[in-house]
Image (cartoon, rainbow, N blue to C red):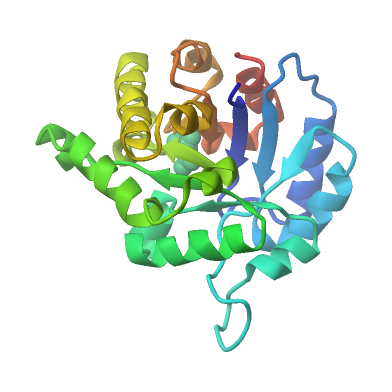
Length: 249
Ligand code: PGA
């Protein structure tokens, strides 16, 4: 059975005091589902968050990392550095990384390799822009993002890959893909995986939806058969909202 996952991507929000306050509020919440719960605070607060949440059901994960092991990459963080502070999962390929930091499929393939080589789990994000969807090219775009960054991997690698479909037009805009649009795309993604790796692998990979998931729409989106959870931005910054989404399964 593939895992259900709700991951909160805090993006560049919350200083240390705000991180501590939000974590305290999260610790007061009760989880009523089997879904795995993760939060991704900003890099400077990962260690604090890891310690504050040790022994709880909330995993602390990173928003990004570099592909190199170490060296002259000013401002960057490696997989080993993350692992050394207890962080074993990393989000890669978020559309904001692609758009503002010029991350390409080729670069992301290297980052995925580096994370997997260290035994980390990857939440790999991708999704089409509004113009792609208007032109009816959403499947072509998503298919090529997945193939370019992931299809050099062997089947076993997918034990440590979670996919996150995030249509760019729905991120932070208040606009969500309809549950049917999400299901259609997730089914396409699973079929794309099955074509290359077979049904057994495709059935085991969790595919999350991201893009303006809120307490009011989470239940309907998560009820779709190929939607295995969510990557949550804005609503993850409020403990009540985030746990309402966690409990929407
Ligand atoms: P959002 O962000 O929930 O604020 O739309 C989702 C994401 O970027 O992962």
